[in-house]
Amino acid sequence: MSKLYQNKNKKKLQPPGDDLKPIQIDETIVSRLASTQRNKLESDSRMMLKNLIEQMESLGLINQNFFDPEDEEDDEFDLKELEEKVKKILGNNRIKVNQKTLNKYFKYLTENLELPCYLSGAEEFFWEEEYLYGPGNAKDYEELKKTNPSYTDIFALEIFQPKFDEMDGIMVDVKRVSDNRQFTLPLAELEVSDEDSPNHSLIEDYLAWFITYS
Image: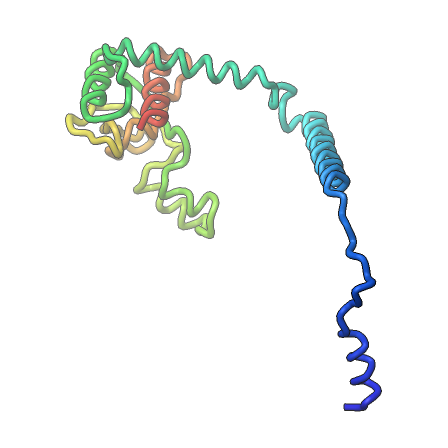
């Protein structure tokens, strides 16, 4: 290593002299700058979100009330309405899902549900997710649908299973309309296919209660 290189680095690494005054930072200025930058970022983000929403509305991808704050109030009101319904059904203010409340809800449904009652999957069944959202093969999916229930199927409710637990809730025996194949499924994974049926709100309320208070 050359002496010239060593001498240059020695000069570089020499500590500052006593006559060098420390730099003082005004924390107020720094704080004000940080706050200004943060506000600018938040403002830019809100503007970008607003523009994105307007573009999606113009393309018809969402409706104008998609981010309406009043929707949250409606959701809160619906939850309170559900609680009042469930309290009347259970005859108690304790509405958490457990063996006792499931038993009361079971009796209520068996006494009030009208037959025939036609059901479909409230959403895709667990086994279908691999084929709808994962790497599953479409041909294999169609083959498996022959022997497994699909959310696109229509089922006729036959009977309620007398035994149930807090994990799956009330279980029902159903028959697939297309081929009469029978399945035993959690009622919380089903919905009434006819929205005008008086059974629709009965099953919908049970589903909302089971999911919210489990």
